[in-house]
Image (cartoon, rainbow, N blue to C red; front, side, top):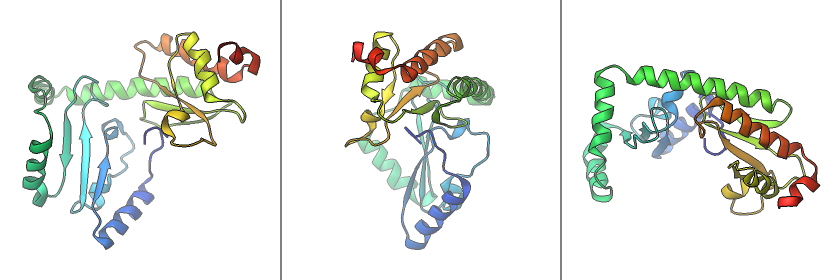
Length: 220
């Protein structure tokens, strides 16, 4: 889940699917990170296929430029859903479609996704090690991670200092419509190409979080 970096467990998924089925409620399941999963947690669609619309894509797990989406649903919705998509959506990139088709035909897609999983595993470990003493949230296959700030430390002050250091992150204020009681910094573990650059950025964030107020006030 974005931005929390949490994954709904099997039992909760089954409860939601059961309640939706009992009351005839349709579910829209956003599973764009699902292809990176290694734990085999079933989708809501598997428990309630007749009433769930499973949304997936390739840009998160395969490559950011491959912006092709996929909807999986019960066959009785195929025609009305196709009409709705054609009426409201521009034609997808034929180049992207050709690339994805080629990767599937050549059995390369699974290899690339496995490589991305391995990279993400390493980066999660780096993040967990640097922020081992902090209140953090991150998922086994989520590219985002959350660092909960100590009480009294404002996310805006941290971000101001980081921007001066040319480090870009996001704060709880960007995901809240009111005053956030729990302020946090959200980082993208895949937003930089090299792991050395990631380590440098994460260490800068750690410095900002553990600094005294005077250091942050210089910029904020």
